[in-house]
Image (cartoon, rainbow, N blue to C red; front, side, top):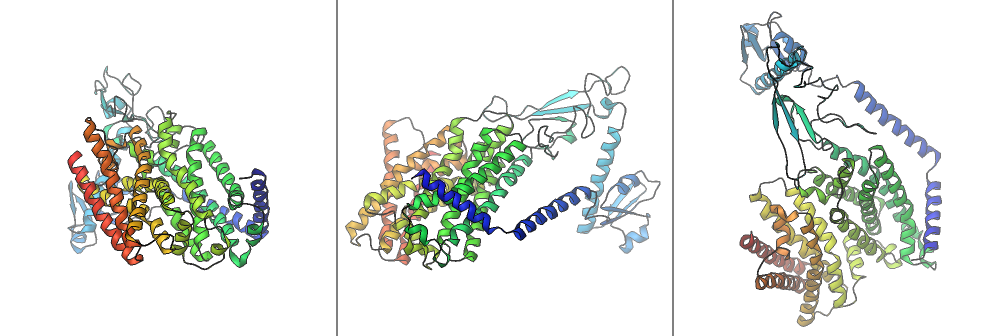
Length: 596
C-alpha cells in the first residue's frame, strides 16, 4: 500500500463528496436538525402532559381521606361517590365508607392498581414533608454494587434511625442521616451523574455504584447509561455509512469507476483512500461524544473498531448490491445487526462477563474510572478488528471490472469474492481459519441474546446455533470453489478439500482460548458454546489429548460431508450441510453432557 496514493485518493474523495452536497441539501439538513431539536425541546416542556389523563373514573367524596390521592393522579378522574352510578357502569372504582370497590373487569382491575399506586405516592410525599425524617423513615437501606470478581458483589445494610418519637432521638439533621427529596442533598436518589453530561435519574443506572434511602426508594440497577451510549455512539455511524455506501456504489453506476481501475494504483490503495475520510469523520465524532460524556482515550479506542466494522460491512454490501435500492436494504441490515451486537451485551455491564462482548462495556468502565485490562480490550475488540480487515479483503476481491460492472445477484457476487481467495487446498484451509473472527462474533451475539433465557432452553439452542454457524463458515468457500470449477469433483479430491477446510478451521479455532482470560466459561451458555471447541480444562494428559483430537476429527468429518454435497450442486450442498449440522450438534450435546 502506497501512502501517497492513498492520501491523494482520499483528498479527491473529500472534494468530490463536498461538491455533491449542494446548498439546498445543507439547508434542508439544518432545518431537519432544528425540527428534531424543537421536538425534543417540546417533549421536555410538555413532560406534564399525560396520555392516560382521566382514564379511570373514581367515585370519591371530597371529605374522604382518599380524595387527595385520587385528585393528584393523572389517570384517575374524581366523580361524586354514588353506588347507583357504580352499578350503572358510570364508575370504574367506588370509595365509600372506607371501602374500595372495583368493577370486576380488566379496566376495573387496572383502575384499582392505579389507585393503590397513587395512594402509595401520596403517603411517601406526606412522610417526606414530616419535620422528623427519622420518624418518617426509621429504616435506611444502603446498597453497594461491585464487580463480580471483587470480594463483595452487593452489600445490603440497614440502619436503625433511633428513637422515632422525636424526643431525644435523631431528627432530620441527626447522626442517622435523612432521606432527602429528589434532586437535593446527599440523599439524592441514584441515577444522577455529575460531570460534563448529566444522566437522568432513572433508577440505578450503570454509572451509579451506590444506592441509599428507604426500602421503597431502592430500585434494581437499570442500564440507562448503556442505552445512552449505544445511541450516542452508534447513531452517527449510521449516517456516515449511508454516504460511504452511496459513494462506493456510485463508482459502479455507468462505469464511473473505470478510470480508477485502469490507473496505476492497486485496488487496496483505492479502497483505503475512499474509506479514510469517512473513518476520520467517525473517529472525530466519537472523540467529540467521548469528550461530552467524560470519556478518555480508552472510550475512543473501544468505539473505533465498531466504526471500522460498520465501514467494512457497508463496503462489502455496496460492492455486492446491484442498485441503490438493494444498497439501502444492505445498509439497514448491517446497521441493525451491528447495533444489536453492540447494544445487547452492554445491557449487562457490571453484572456479568457477557458484557465484555460489546466494546461499549469498556466505554462504561472508562466513564466509571475503572481500569480496563488489556485482555478485556483484546476480547472485546480483537474479533471486530479481524472481521473488519477480512471484510475489506473480501470486498477488494471483487473490486475488478468483471464484478463491479455486472448485474450479478448478491449471492453470486459473494461466491465470486470467496472464489477470488482460493487457489488450492492450502488456500481453503487459510480461508477457513480466517473465518474464525466472523464465527466468534456470531457465537458471541448468540450467547448475549440467549443469556437471559432459562438454561434448559438456552443450552440446546446455543448448541444448534454453534453448529450452524461453524458449518456454514467451513463450507461456503468450498461451495464457491466447486461452483467455479476450481476443484476436481472426484471423491478423493473432494475429501481432500473437506479435510483441508476442517484442519484450517481447527487451527484457527484455537484462537478462541482468549475467552479463558475474561471468565466467559464461568457462564453456562459460554461453556456450551466454547467447551466443544476443545477449550475446556482437564487434568489428565490422555483425556486432554483426546479432547484436542476430537474437535479436529469432528471438523474434518463435517467439512467433508458439506464438500461431498457441494460438488454436486447447491441443492446437494444443502443436504450435506444439514447432515454436518446434525453431526456437529450431536457432538456438542455429547461433550456438554459428559463434561458439564
